Image 1 (cartoon, helix red, strand yellow):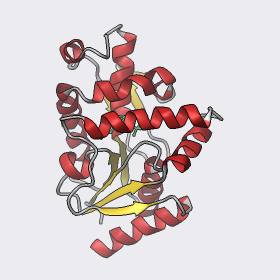
Image 2 (spheres, helix red, strand yellow):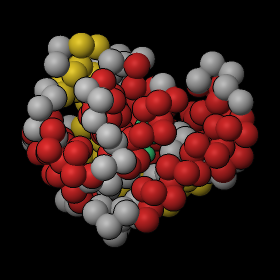
Image 3 (cartoon, helix red, strand yellow):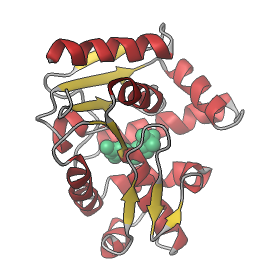
Length: 218
Ligand code: C5P
C-alpha cells in the first residue's frame, strides 16, 4: 500500500483527523488535512478584510495566498505566505467563515490543484469532504466516517480546550448544513466508500478498522 491513496471523508468532528493521522502513522504513509487548507484560505481572506460572505470578493483574491501543507502525520504543518497558522485556523472566526469560503468554486479549484500536487504518486491518507468523490476518486480505500452529533460536539469542544458543548454543536451543524448543501463538491458518501460509524468505538478501534480495510485492499 506504499502508493495507495486512503480517502477519509465525513462531517465536522467525526474524528477524521485523529483517525487519519493514526492510520498514516501505523502504515508509514503521509497525511494531508484538506480542511486545514480551506481554513488557511479563510484565515487569509479575514486577515485581508475580504467580505467572506461575498463569493465574488473571495473569488477575486483566490490566487493570492501561498498555501503550503506539510504531510508528517506526527506534526502536520500549514503555512500561509510563510506564516505558521496551525493554531490561528482553529479560531471561532475561522470556524464561522470557512464553509461559505469553501463553497466558492474558484476556491475549490485552486485548492484542488494544490491537493493533487501533494498527493502525487500516492502513499498518503487524505481527509476532507470531497476526497473520495472529487479530489481522488481513484483512491484505493475510501472511508465515510460519521458519529452522532452529540459525540462529535463533545469531542470537538474538548479539542478546543473545554469550549461550550452546545455552542460547538451548533457551529458543527451549521457547517455541515452548508457543506452538504453547496452546489460544488458537496459532502457526500463517495461511490465505493465504506461507511464507518465511530460513535460507539474508541479511536484505536476505528484506526484498526481502517488499517484492516487497507490491508484487505492490498
Ligand atoms: O475538516 P475541517 O472541519 O477542518 O474543515 C473545515 C471546513 O473546510 C469544512 O467545514 C468545509 O467547509 C471545508 N472543507 C471542504 N472540503 C474539504 C475539506 C474541508 O469544503 N475537502
